[in-house]
Image (cartoon, rainbow, N blue to C red; front, side, top):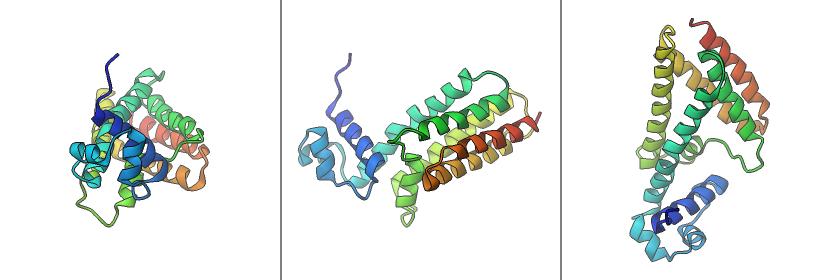
Length: 188
């Protein structure tokens, strides 16, 4: 087992707190305390709260993408079935009492008045990576217009994240799964 670095402990604390409470609601003092470090140590690893917010999203990027890939790859059937399964997994996750929606989307909303913020750029890049990954899966499945199809599915995904968060109703994920299945199936 590898030992967690101080930076990792700070990011773990930031992940838990930012996701649970929002980035503006959580102070650096609270993160330092939760990570078991001094504020000076936190600043040694992250120059500012903005830097820590960016680090928080960067730490979520690959694990989130890997999870979507796992769900897709483990699903039975063709591209339509596999795409629908991603939405069904989102719905299952949204049933957990600690589910707070998409951390990337929530951060973008909290920083809506700061379009140049590094975290906004990281969030946008994450969403683009997912879209590109999905387009590649659709191209591999020889579906027509894979980039356009991926963009349509991403729009459904962002919509379901927002709608489930607003209504606290994971059944919207099932409706999105059916819509995504239909969109992908018609591209055969």
